[in-house]
Length: 234
Image (cartoon, rainbow, N blue to C red):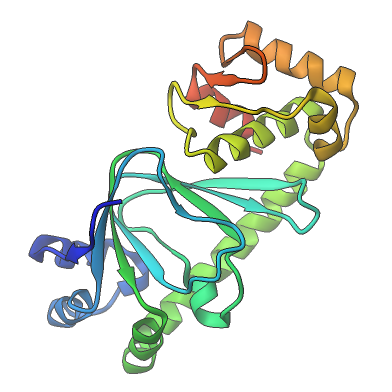
């Protein structure tokens, strides 16, 4: 990520596209933007990692990011994409707990960052922001419940795909053509996804045969990121 800079005038107005700032006047948006710093994030780079203790809130000004959520069991993972206008990281700003999601850039991005202190002050100054956030969190919770149920019902191959995506993201390789190194053995993968080595081996072989991935001695290359993500979507 490049050094932080200030938000541009048009980007400040573009914040109105975020559901979080719906109903906030343009003049107030400029004041909010003045509190933010902006990072240029290259494709594949990690922005936030599960377990981090940072509490900043982030806003996607341009580009797309991918988020993966790890359940407490460590086995079940949800993923979602955030486009321009989206925001993330607000839960840690609210409760001070460690990050529950890992997020990386799936394209070159510009990301605005707001500190926990400024975010809290803005919600007190503009109650509309707090109301918008409550609605957004409720929507996410309903969606998460639906997707978690889908993951419980998933077959082994889908769980293997999700694990491959997590490994790729951890190594900043969740991009078209990305290569994961030091891939766990099929036995270790089976333990993680709650299956057996034979079933995992068959799943990896099918993904390779269909051209989604390529495998070679502890390495997995992503040949078709779109199809990989489609295979992971509940």
